[in-house]
Image 1 (cartoon, rainbow, N blue to C red):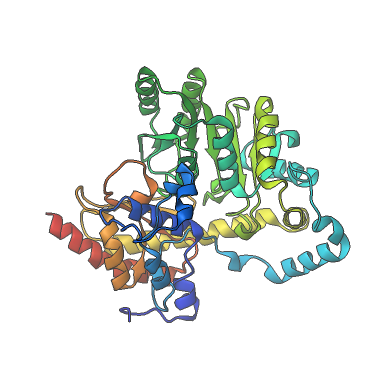
Image 2 (cartoon, helix red, strand yellow; image 1 turned 60 degrees about the horizontal axis):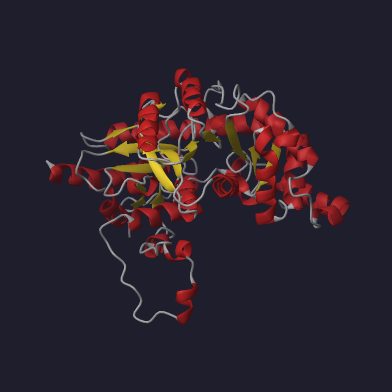
Amino acid sequence: MYPDTVTTPSSGANAAAENLSEEAVDALSRAQAGAATTIPSPAHSHRHESLLSTRAANIKQSAVRDVFEISMQPGLVSLAGGNPYLQSLPLERLGATAAKIIAEHGLEALQYGGGQGTLELRQQICEVMAAEGILDADPENVVITAGSQSAQDVAAKVFCDPGDVILIEDPTYVGALNTFEAYEVDMQPVAGDEHGLIPSALRATIATLRAAGKSIKLLYTIPNFNNPSGVMLAPDRRQEIVDICREANILILEDNPYGLLKFDGVLPAPLRAANPEDVLYLGSFSKIFAPGLRIGWALVPAQLKQRYYLASEAVTLCPPTFNQLLVSEYLRNYDWQGQIATYRSLYQERCAALLVALEEFMPQGVSWTRPAGGFFIWLTLPEGIDTYPLLYKGIDAGVVFVPGAAFSVVPGPSNKLRLAFSAVPPTALREGVKRLAPVLAEAVNSAK
């Protein structure tokens, strides 16, 4: 069905066309919502439609569900999903550990737990944050959540009324956009460049919004290997950004799922490191251990912890106890830092393979980021090209990517797209780029 199908054992259909992650599904849905294609309303709506809240009624229906089904077909290379490569985990040993937890602590593991999370795991999370560069974390200020996605949701609930402003990087994580949108906030983009958020642009955006009478509550940022761009915020900009927000009384929501995945292991200090009162810091085991466990955390400024904790408890009652115990066992008895070193090496190899393939196959006029960590590379095509229609042409050629419109609140088409390298073997990455290049070349030539 697809040209030059990859058939090597390490990069066969299942490896090359892994299931699209939920994040990729959301991204494709969001990209479609901003495209010119419209979705007709159903001919007959159910009477319960009138009961929907404004928030629910505004949730966009996706017209790309067929894309998700197509992406499962053998031979198609998926560069869309931002999944970690779990095959490098000691799965057999983890299975034995899980069985041991049930055998020895079954009643505790399967019972309700505390709403803030177990003390042991909160203490261990502080050790993980120390490796990330936060040396003063107090377990009392850690709230364990159902992944950092849940932590974002709680932050929006605690701090934002409808119409309040959340400042965001442009582009930024699609899951955060969907979460904030559900709370009817006004998301305002702040310009960035190859070094991340631009402090002068942040200051100017704040001034403009304040002059218009807007209430700005949060700045949401992924300073390390932004999803989707892969860009890392320059160290010399970090404190300036905190200072600008402090002066404006804006709380920073720092999301750092990829920080430990810097290829060389030399990590810049998080925004939170020297600013405990001004930054609400989000972390997750999804990228460094196992996303299916849905264990993340928020390190909350002490003066805000009680409000945040109560809001989190109201949503989930408590984080899953069994999953917490499994993560604790992993951090206590496994070489988790060695596993992260393995991930760094593996992702660096895959990123390098993707960059080499881009250099070899991409037409003139296409540029891309060169990340020093994380999962993603961000491509830019000439102005005037909309990458959303190219998604379907890419599928016809045997490759899937995520159009750039998925990651922006700026209306209209986008000339950008995201490629993910984390879960795809090097040979399949090369094949995917080889298939994608003619699609982009046709678009570039047509735009001349």
